[in-house]
Length: 97
Image 1 (spheres, rainbow, N blue to C red):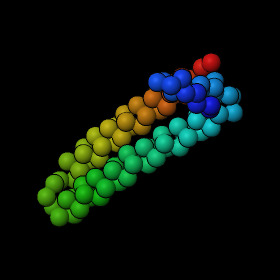
Image 2: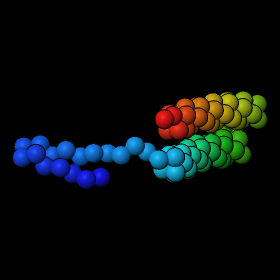
Image 3: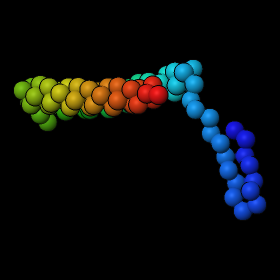
């Protein structure tokens, strides 16, 4: 980048992205996506632990705990799929010339 000063305006020419730079951006995007998935899984684990603790403390029945765990897994799968969908779209957008 080479800034040019016209007296009242500073012009900054930004070069086109190279294939190598695009690949780096895709890699960084995938890492951020994986971090998001890990966060979702950590939340699932924390909630599952609370459900298990409630079941041991007899504040919920075994059937309620099973249903809560099933609902939790469905929600987790839904958000993981949404993250994957967003990542795929972003990768296509980055790699588009």
